[in-house]
Amino acid sequence: MPERFIDEAWIKGDFKKATISASQAGLTDHIWWIKYPYKLYAKFKPEKPSISLKAGGEIHTYFQKILSKQLTLKQAKEKFLKLRDLFS
Image (cartoon, rainbow, N blue to C red):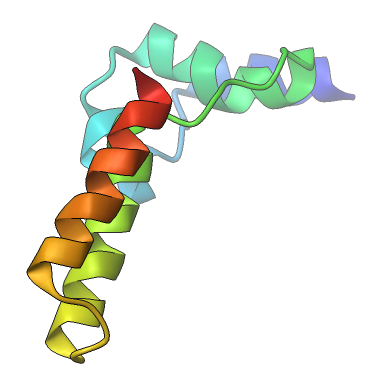
């Protein structure tokens, strides 16, 4: 029963926050609780990916391609500006 898991985790304080990202660890316990474990059981509407997550992933990809000579810095900048325009 999902409610039982939620009750026990809240009472024991076992939120398993040791393996989460720095941005998640910076949240207060009750906000983290609602955004992550509770959301799985409450069936909230899915959130859109954050611009920070998308941009960070793309920058990593561009950097790897620049190092392997598959992309120039100018091409990476053009691709990144197109991505930025999608979010504005």
